[in-house]
Image (cartoon, rainbow, N blue to C red; front, side, top):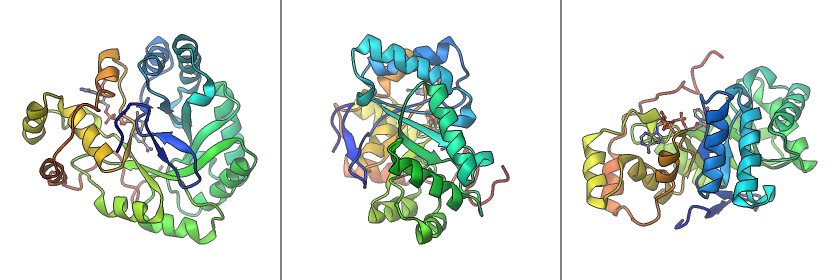
Length: 280
Ligand SMILES: NC(=O)c1ccc[n+]([C@@H]2O[C@H](COP(=O)([O-])OP(=O)(O)OC[C@H]3O[C@@H](n4cnc5c(N)ncnc54)[C@H](OP(=O)(O)O)[C@@H]3O)[C@@H](O)[C@H]2O)c1
């Protein structure tokens, strides 16, 4: 069990990934972004999750450099993730997209690179590109995002390297239990995006009562529920006090009974697109 902000899960290729990272979806280039990434690193975060489509890799890169210098750490102590967008799925296009991301971030390798969405007929070629980049040492680990079980099965038919991660929407209204169990059986680490349901479940009465018992916030309860389920989390905030709060998860433990109550909030309700029915 994780009991420190920098604790890691060991991915199926032996690479260590922090259980907690900062998400930066919808944060535009600029001082707020740079400061959020910097603050997260200074407050002990070691993982940052971005994507080409977020259009903010440059600022993330600046925040990383600022964080490294202020925290007095080395780049190797960080775990940086980006993702290839749908328009760039294809062998050559994916290699090129990767190089562009790397350049914008100002880095010479990525820790994790993901196929952002499982576009049918396209993701296998992109995966071949990821495998090559991995073999060349330009990425420490390769994975996918928004893959359902059938997408994973399809990918693994031809893959020579298994994905280490599947990053999917997961929160108390979309517990994704079947997918979680499948990934755990296959040794694919599940990672939750929109773990706080983009802020839409934080005033839920059930969560509030559990939070009150532990003298914590509902956000902390949800994040802790993920950690106790062995799920990696990347909550997004640009507010320094929330960045700190979202990492203050290690002085309490949810009871089995509380874990089940939170599971019981599931309604298979998405705040993001459905991986089986999207048109972008
Ligand atoms: N792979 C994918 O397709 C995909 C899709 C979506 C997201 N993601 C990744 O997952 C990350 C997280 O998901 P998300 O950004 O969609 O949503 P989220 O982390 O579930 O929620 C973020 C929202 O909650 C607020 N918030 C954060 N901490 C809080 C706290 N302690 N108390 C109250 N409010 C709080 C934030 O506001 P403030 O910023 O104002 O604090 C923001 O509005 C993204 O940033 C991105 O890196 C991936």
